[in-house]
Image (cartoon, rainbow, N blue to C red; front, side, top):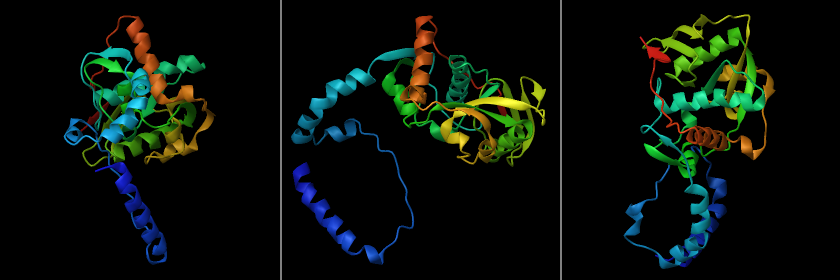
Length: 254
């Protein structure tokens, strides 16, 4: 099937839908991710391949460079996972570059869109993990709001938290206990947190974040999480360190 033959069809369908627009309304919007791999090579389209070839070298030059290495494949999952642990720790690691000393980091499971492979990690791999324009940010919450934040994490079965955090949640998703650096949450204290700007608005059911104050949220493209993650890998690679992460009891279900 040639692309040029499908175009009039879509024009016709657009005209029909527009002409009937007054009789319909959107009731649901859904989406899914389609991995384009060798499955689609059985019926190649010469015209499409020629079009793509013009840009392939440029794309490969951006996506193919190796930024680091991992000791094992890493994926995300609740209540805790290797990849969510790693990304939350990277948020805290990045704090020094902004003159920040966050006491903990939070990365949402929904923002992790792929696994990291074992061995070579390319910029393309990082982009698959963090494809959105989410940027790092730093904010403050009162201890009482931090406790609410952890309750909200418990209600969904867990989110990514950095190594200083220990949460215990019940099987019916209630928060049993929470500590930061081994200490109970001080309800009157102010805590500094590293996260992403998307969560700072209270999204992904973490509404406690909307009560933040003293937020630092740089808007330049260089602050996108894909670059923060890549920079972490590059620094470790320069040190000869193979990146690793483990499930270590940051969030336990009892």
